[in-house]
Image 1: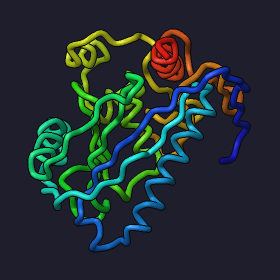
Image 2: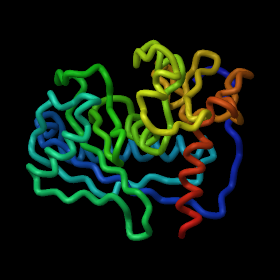
Image 3: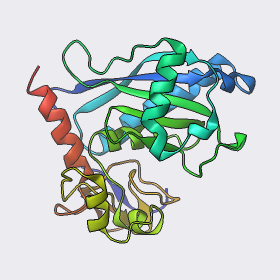
Image 4: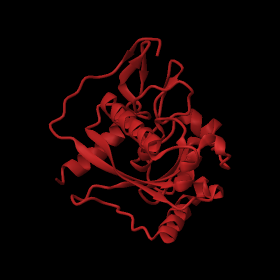
Length: 244
């Protein structure tokens, strides 16, 4: 990436490890080997942990389950159908999802579809549930898709521009009303000097959550009042670290 990008330095006494369980449609094996899929998934994991480190968040992702399920009907790949998709996969494959680990830390469950070019009825890479720790995503899409969706599940939101121009909310207040649950005022992404943090839809991404301690070409990539997703994720980690 061209430009002067500066991340904060940080050290942690403890780091929260969060498990990710992925359930992958067998249809992807028409184009990819199981080793190819595993390589893609561990690229997601590596990118997720780079984002967390760059953002000074005391947390790591670890994909501990990669399980193949019956081919999935792509028509279910819509935001409004995330929870129905999760239930359908569970029923058809006799799966019992794990929601928390032995220490009570949430486990994030992902339903993974095939390649972008296979014609799924959506322009997006993934969707997160509004009521559980589940997400759906395309396998061949942005390498940050897993962390972006887990960010949503942890309380992080898109930047204001994305919410208005792409998600088509009439205002930020309209978005908050639609969510139907409290939203932290600083839980939004940030665009800085033409680059977007991970919760934006900018074509040029900074591999970090919005954070006022990150700068790009002299511009802060966060604001303590309305764009500090790193704080949201940090508070998530600290909540569970305090219990263990």
